[in-house]
Image 1: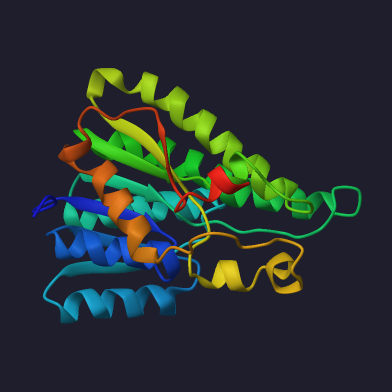
Image 2: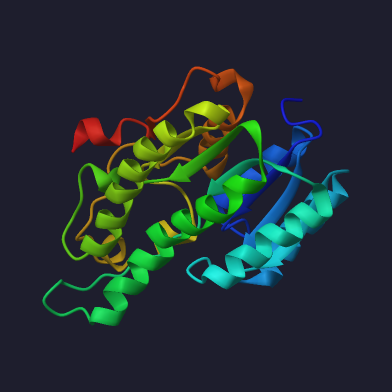
Length: 243
């Protein structure tokens, strides 16, 4: 029980990787703040946790909205006390060439994916216990990408740089900051990708389960990873090796 009496915030906790991470944290004793744009999905995650004997709170949030992020942090601290782990999982994609994409759509992706990491770190860190952990979700698209997803790939590459830099800033407090870069994972984001549907993006090699990523996230958030800091763990079933 690596997270007994620990408080964790997981964004995007209503589905996919975020949902699996919430369930894993709860199984290991954590009090989980499940933050999601779709509060009904977050409530379903909480219901599953509570039914299994765990403790969780559902919170609605647009992760690209600073005020809403601050509200999530305040409500989490009010309910459970100082934060021990923050998992920044929420993200979105667009599928439009750069010359065609609207400026607002480009920056919406950047704000949702990268801005959310900034907001949760900026406003969450002052409420974290020393020795805590932050895990940011990157993607193999930060390393090898395809056409028409430049905003997404750019945001994920920036998240990895953000992770490295922030890990240095938090050395004195021993708060570790790492990232996980998933490959193809059996989630709605994968199967709703129009490039995958059309065959423009070939899903080659293994397709992971959300639980595979949850295991990596919880490892990095736990004391098992006490000597892992400022790095990106690629969890892709070998996909990058085949690209």
